[in-house]
Length: 529
Ligand code: G4P
Image 1 (spheres, rainbow, N blue to C red):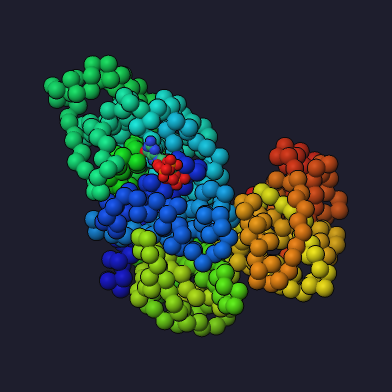
Image 2 (tube, rainbow, N blue to C red):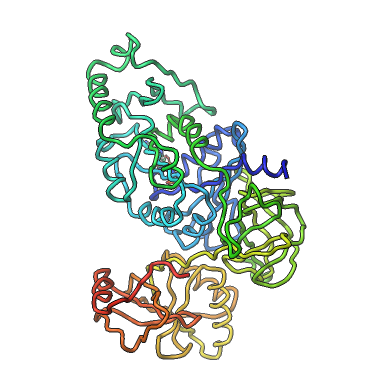
């Protein structure tokens, strides 16, 4: 157990969240560079290698040059074993992006200094808040004209409802960017552009009280900094590790990923402030990786193999406790039997490799002959338990789907059900009718194309889709509710999921509140359990 414990303790498993173009890929690449996992900047740069290495077998990805699934990268840095979960952010934003956050122990939020909090960050942030995991902020692109620093922090606090605590403070931005002031050490880290370097490059630091500081920063910048420090000391929250751990206070760092500036400082502070693998809730209470010796994991993502001759899939699981060894047999709780975990894969920097062993905190992908579902638990513990399931996240796009050839009804139903089981789409039915009409809900519109392509390619079924105007879905939490009597708004539609649970679709978000007001005691939820 001692060995397992020390392996688990050195693990840091986190997700990076951001709005597209804020610099997530660049920052990830710099982490790998500092960790020595790659030796040249540019070798990960999403569009070229890493993202494709993960899923180069998927035609639709090749066609569009994007990645539909999220990847995991592992590397070592100063005694830590780091797992970075990539959250797809562009058009490929999907429910998987949310699920990835369920597998992380903390999140790094990358914000573009000229833009502040943007839509996609806001959505992902909600999931982090729901889980109360620590959230760290990296304000990127300081080498470009940035918003006022106080406004940026205000924006985060107001938009996301979380207190912030700047660990360092930027001195100017864009052409006038001089570096950052470290509040604790009371020294200035001077900006230098080392983007061309293949390694980190020298960072010069200088004490804020040093006589030469005026000359180095320039009198104006120095005066502004002093003013801002005074203001900040009065206005911002004190650093409090306990609040950080509970996800109530976000430490904020400034830098420029592209030029390597501030990345190492961030990484060092972050690794100390973040957490090793967290305990997880199960039906037998909390399972703590530092006391539970046996292997346990839950499936958070299923990736289909696009080779239609082999309808195999890869099930990605987050190991929560114990040690994994290739080929080991474990009990699959939902399947009710022992399974052998074969072909375990892990992504190291930019290549896939077979893993021989892995520990709590790690993510592995195993061969799935079609037996796993999202949220399933696997364990080798004698006293078996199931981890809390993964919620269903609210889709934002809906379409009515029909097969073109009515003779292919069976394949259509089979295909659409299998794709839904993988978690790529959610399927619903009209509230009052049977299966004739299927309504598909997706988190990102690309999933519609994936569905169409896959049904055609793998199941030989052509479909027609009619987009529906709904954008909001709510699960009804009340056990006893008579849907016939529920009085909604004119833009509302009653539907049910495959388990027969009632749901409501809305075109406008204000209708949600109105419906709640009209039906006393009605509890609507954004996450399905
Ligand atoms: P993403 O994964 O969050 O979508 O963002 P990504 O890292 O791909 O970065 C988006 C763009 O922003 C890239 O430029 C990248 O070079 C640039 N960028 C990232 N960090 C910084 C920074 O600190 N400062 C500045 N000035 N730019 C930054 P691009 O032109 O879209 O791509 P490329 O042609 O450079 O590859």
